Length: 212
Image (cartoon, rainbow, N blue to C red):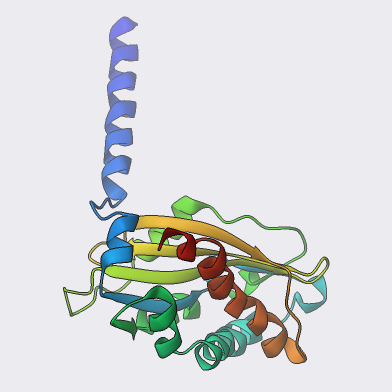
């Protein structure tokens, strides 16, 4: 009986070790984010997102195919790379949307809209980022992505994680949850688009700028 229990324990430890090895790691720190001359901006990732608005429960496919790109475009129009360079004090901010565009296109339409509050799991977020296409320029080591968590119309609130990661393997360097309530606009694109721009602006104002 003891031998059987020992085998079970060994198997569990082996499984845990294998799972641990699957999680990417990095030696990069937030200090590297500040000192790097270049960061790669991937865009708004909606892979682990829910729109909490029951009246749109059947609009998942349209929101995925139309609104995900529209919200990304909205942010780019308001916060171009030149403005990000100024905010984050970088020589260049490279926009690389391919990985996020692919990830967003794979979201199941049934998963886009929900009736109840939603909380994304960091393990799922890490898995998504680890699956990003690796950059061809190996000098661009620092990636930045806004992992949108939810839009909730009532009460008016939006949540996302601003994440810096190692582009070589997707290992998260640092993540910060940003919840914004100060937005408005006409139409679905502008209304939540303002929330999306706030994710970056409020992160810079309340977190990043404090470390400069």
